[in-house]
Image (cartoon, rainbow, N blue to C red):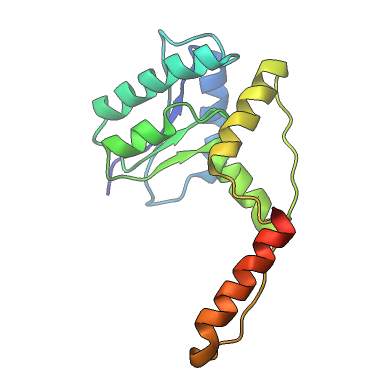
Length: 165
């Protein structure tokens, strides 16, 4: 993979895209892939609503299709618009800031918070997170005894159901 890593700003703000490009400069690795930041000129000015995110998802997919030369893609928007569809269009890595940020936070602690840009963003983020976060409400261990495995598995499963409902 020798192409650039493409940072896709799914909104139409060139100033935000320029800021992303500036933020990437100190992260550049000598002899590593180039970083390229692009915005979608016909995208919404910001991703403020579910409708904006849905429209941006289509635009992100179009950008991934148009740039098969890239080594990887980063959706540079916390809503991760188009993440799943972009992954279905390429065998190259596709990263979303929301997914990466939450997984990084969960790697450090059990609880985390998100600062959103407005009430519509809060609702949208909560909905999206529900699709892929599994809340572990109880966990029971079983001893690795082959003869007892089926019985212990049934017993522990019932304990989980009893504890969690």
